Amino acid sequence: QVHLVESGGGLVQAGGSLRLSCTASGRASYAMGWFRQAPGKERGFVAGISWNGGSTRYADSVKGRFTISRDNDKNTVYLQMNSLKPEDTAVYYCTAGNNLAVPTRTPAYWGQGTQVTVVS
Image (cartoon, rainbow, N blue to C red; front, side, top):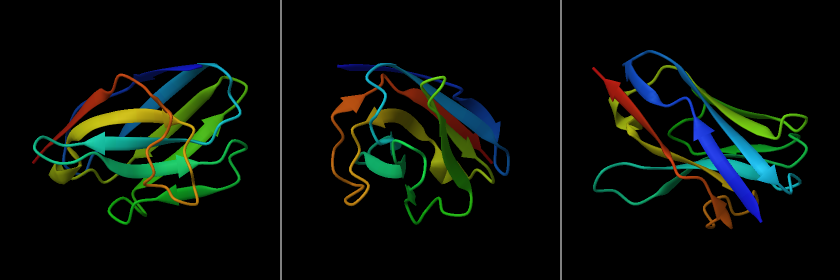
């Protein structure tokens, strides 16, 4: 069993940056990632990272703007979000048990979510 707790969400102006953090308790040797869900839209894949950090995947909509990383000594995964746009507004969920070969596949474990709001 893995318990995930996100932090770092908030309100930011378009063009700004935020960094989300996710701390995992329990088994840490999972691929992890981030999904998001905007109001009225389906939940979607954002980014994923392998258990050792050697491989990453990104949704096309965030490539070049978002960076996922992890620190296994701290059991923590990060999502650095730069050049934020209003369309990035969503609840962001940390996940574990991601499948990087099929990144849109629903992961096994989910955090409670953190709100990110980007205003123009």
